Length: 307
Length: 274
Ligand SMILES: [Zn+2]
Image (cartoon, rainbow over all chains, first blue to last red; front, side, top):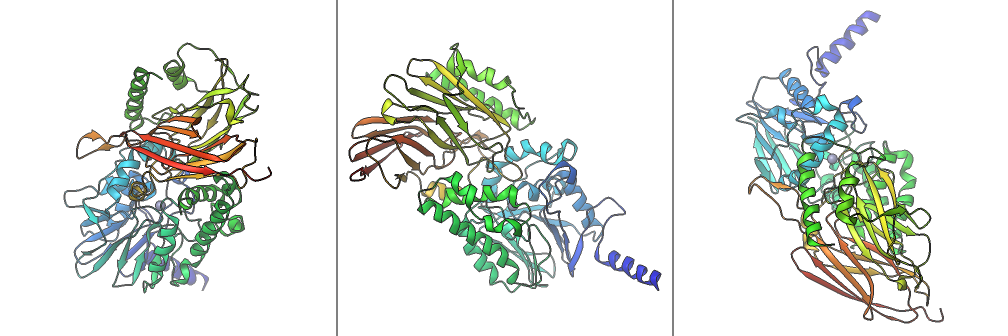
């Protein structure tokens, strides 16, 4: 009986998780044809090889779309092998949900004559401004070996507002959002399974990082809440199955951030005073709070003092 | 600072950018390699003494957001007519433009304490060098770690930055007390763009677009002159002190690298009975 249960567990994990007897990232099939690798809820370091963001791919009848490629060519290669462990269809599209290095620096692994690199219309400018800096920091973040061969790949298809890609019998809708987490956020909607790849517009359990516009983010969340999603893949954190309830923690944090920072500004306080005092009630509710809250406050302060 | 000196610093900026794309050279605490290159360009052969006890640098040990790091240069003695800080230079060794800003002060500031926000590109030493009224140079420095993860010393919202260009704010303290130093906060909306990005299409460096001069006066009297550089954060921010016994008006003139002039006029009311 015990061994039968054991067998079930093995079969279950083989069905759900195509990890690697070969060398590839572990991916989970969350819906028919939709696969996700869940990154660790950590900051990027050589010891975790920068494996911190959620990466995914969607398989249609004649092609595959990859959604984000990881922190390094090493992770890009691993993700590519994970795709190959599921299908031999061509990887036609590589979609970058935004400029951050944990989402784009595996792109180079997918470069091919027919690969289309897709991003928000503002991604190209952001990559240009930040790319050299990210490349400089990469050996430090993921280690010298994993960083080798990294390149910033310019998007070849820009999404101004919305664009639909046809993977063969399966259409996915890409949407560019007003500035929020960054000024180049993009989500992916798979209508067939009502799955939303939310990009870093959604953090679950891990503290959200503000690198765009706080007011814009709060208003984007209302737009996202209206999407009739059954499954939502956050940029960081576990799969969300209750929507829009799944974004309420993040909405609360961002609202507290806005209100606390506004209060300091109203009393002619400084950025440093705000960094020392804002959002302290959120401290135990988020992973990596100590690493990112002060940074979020400084970004919010620089934005809100112009209100 | 002469134009030859500026040219040399610009050359240094391009050189370091070429380097930064190939090898990560993160300075360690106490690493003087870069400082020894910069120092003669800014200060020539002048002797620089230890500034502890005269000024202090208030800065985080790790940059939280590479694009916006708040820094204060704290003056430990008041400005008095017979001994005051005339000039403060802020230097970030490992930045593409290491001379972040030069501040010119007067005895009438009351206090020479200054705050601003800077970009920090890498692990680096940060220095404040004060020139005293007798010409003597003194320096304090400290080491700062670069911001982690996805932080970059770049704009968060490139379109918004341009849309607000040239707007200005002067935030007074809640009460301006007669005859005592009051801290004012000047904000100028400007992308203060480094211009060091390489444009793949034109095969050129995008020209820098930054504030190069700020002059503040109070009823015609000089208050503070700043010569900033691209290492100052987007939407340049400065806290400075001023002493007055009467209500009056700050006039601010800012000039950017395209020679566009921005001006602002800010009345100040001294608290009655103070
Ligand atoms: Zn991100």
